[in-house]
Amino acid sequence: MDSRKIRIYPPLIVSLVVSLALTAAAFNTISSRADCEAEVSENFTRGTPPEVLAISTPATAGTLTTTEAEPEPTQASMIMSRDWGAEDSEILLKIAMAEAEGESIEGKALVMLVVLNRVWSEDFPGTIEDVVFQPRQFSPVREGGRYYTTEPDRECYEALELVMQGWDESGGALYFESCDNSSWHSENLEFLYQYGNHKFYR
View 1 (tube, rainbow, N blue to C red):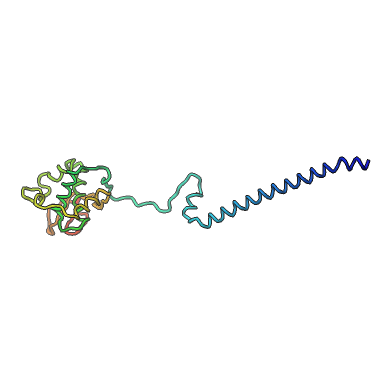
View 2: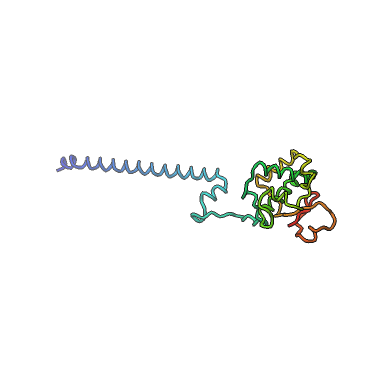
């Protein structure tokens, strides 16, 4: 009887011990992985800027929120809605030089923008050439005027580049003048601002 027990139970005991050993090893492996992942996550969190964490772990899934809304523009710009060719660019360069030779780059750009604002307005012709050469609008294009006697300088080209890149601080201006006294513009139009020696109206 005793000898049979010795023959039957040792394999069961061995199997039990092996099973316990394997279970313990598996548990240790899982625990180690969990600790490692927790450590990596903690290190990542420590080294990650708060704004990145805010984006990668939003409070509400699928929702992207911004802390501050951008202000609404007071005047919608049309500057990026059209393009123009080399001939139109030459007209813009020459009228800016003729009208604003003594002004800054921005002052020259504002003259160009008045022309473009007119092109985009229903109250004026629909092309740059037709706007600039519309009768009784831009005095330099009269016969013998400065439009024909001056050449655009470097600042005119910089102004054109500024406009073509999307710069538009014109406020929708459709008119400008350089006189200081009372004029048709000041009496009949909405004054917007003065930049350099020019007053701009709409």
